[in-house]
Amino acid sequence: MLDFLGNLKRTHYAGALRVAHEGQSVVLMGWVARRRDLGNLIFIDLRDREGIAQIVFNKDQSAAAHAKAETLRSEYVVAIEGRVVRRQKANPEIATGEVEVVASALHILNTSATPPFVIEEEINATEETRLRYRYLDLRRAKPQANLALRHKVILEIRNAMSELGFYEVETPMLTRATPEGARDYLVPSRVHPGQFYALPQSPQIFKQILMISGLDRYFQIARCFRDEDLRADRQPDFTQLDLEMSFVRPEDVFEVIEQVMQRAMRVIGVNVAAPFRRMLYKDAIRRYGSDKPDLRFGMELADVTQFFDAGRETLKFEGSVFALTATGGATLSRKQLDELAEKAKGFGARAMYTIKVAPEGIASALAKTLGDEAVKKIAEAAGAKSGDLVVAVAAQKQIKGTEAAALVAGQMRLHLAEKLNVIPAGRPFATAQGKSFASAQGKWEFVWLTGFPLFEWSDTENRWAPAQHPFTGIVEEDLEKLETAPWEVRSKGYDLVLNGVELGSGSVRIHRADVQARIFRALGLSDEQARQRFGFFLDALSFGTPPHGGIALGLDRVVMLLAREKSLREVIAFPKTTAAQDLMADAPNTVPQEQLDDLGIAIKGPK
Ligand code: ASP
Image 1 (spheres, rainbow, N blue to C red):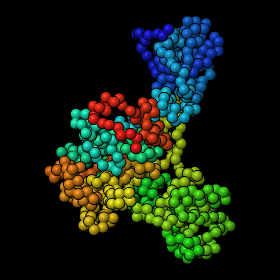
Image 2 (image 1 turned 180 degrees about the horizontal axis):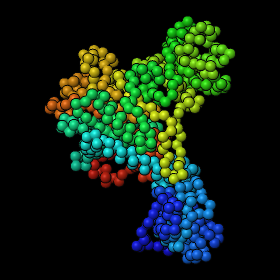
Image 3 (image 1 turned 120 degrees about the vertical axis):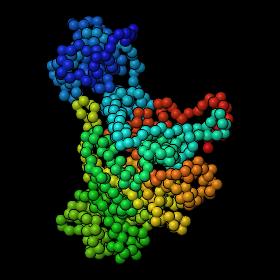
Image 4 (image 1 turned 30 degrees about the vertical axis):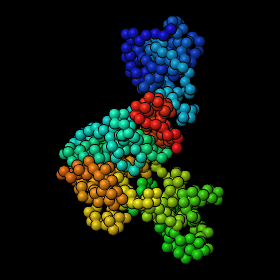
């Protein structure tokens, strides 16, 4: 028989009890995390949002409550009346470990089916099971802490934005397509058969229109929807801090974001210095082989192509060679080096060469072909010291106008840094409260990347495509090159990167209708197509648009980094799998025929 809640009122969170509560009568409510039956004594761990408290049922003191406690099973929902006492032997592992509650009454409010996995921190369940039973997974302390952190970070960001003079404005979910380089999720209209809304890939057009409306400073914690091919670090619907400001230069946007991020970081006790570092895109590629460089450690790349000139014939290749120093890598075994070479090939290298720098001298098979002097110069260029290993990778082609060898070396840099454990990452930890998993340890390296090209050549579409979205501003001096040398046109775009993770991008926009029309043309859209897709926006641009710019940061990513998680799924309450499925709600799914009929939709069958 279950009990009613009746007039019972909770007095404390179980997880909040401390020595200071000793002697107090309390009413606690929560879930049975564990039960130990020692005959006359029954112990349960009572779990609620704030943590776990130990409850004791003593047969000699309250026989009725003790008898009832015998029927408790995992995840039953209970209310407990009792008194806080000091434990004879404290448990330093949990925050409530110095006290326990001697129960005088037990109310069983609900039973529970046997959970598919035991709800504890180190759980033994596949991610699929965890996602299917997400409500149970979320009962664990860590996901709870992650959601609490998420709340605090977003609250801090909202407050910061408001204090900086931004208004939060909601933009529509049912709207027209806004291009951000992904496919749209479409929503069929019932009242306009054959017509569709698109869910926004971002509020881009609306936020620009708000600038035309004179709102001056807009922000939104915005849900965005992008139908992309499966990628491990993406979610089809996700949250951005989206903002737009009028009469600004890129620096003004940087300043706002720097202040906001400083405050967000303080939530986990980290103070970061501003202004953040700045780096040109081309320097990031040359020095780190990446457009999102992880600056927490060195191991910079060196272009050592020139030293290979003498050996081209023997080594039989034409492209370029980039080298880097694997700090302390001289101790790697033959087998480990073979594995490295395999990795390099997997990243697209044509060949990998190594140079060992030891106290006895420099050793490399390259010496035979290139000579000792060249090998020494390569090691110097890579900045190797005694005990290090120089890894050089050769690749032929260019990828999107950049040296493929640099990009391969960039991937090797990350791989080696991880392998040799040189990234000052800081580790997640659980405090005694089981509450704070985020930690201030490790380095936090922000960097702004600028100087991106406006266009990228798209092999699949055989035309120039915007490197970002088509509203990105263009460096004024490059306007003439728009039609003659589009690859040389520089954008007014920027990216914010933290510890090798791209947090988001933005730009100062095109604010003139004539320039916007030229961009559409350069992108291969006829005036008619441009009008058809963006006519309303071109119209709006023609009515006194102020210069403006903005940015959007991936909030899921920010929280993931602060929570020291490796997956976005750990910081989103109800995430989707990499196959874009919601395993708990079982979406996407079929719909009843009547609903399709209402919409005038016939399913052609799977492709
Ligand atoms: N709308 C862009 C995005 O979502 C960001 C921006 O340009 O403000 O990536």
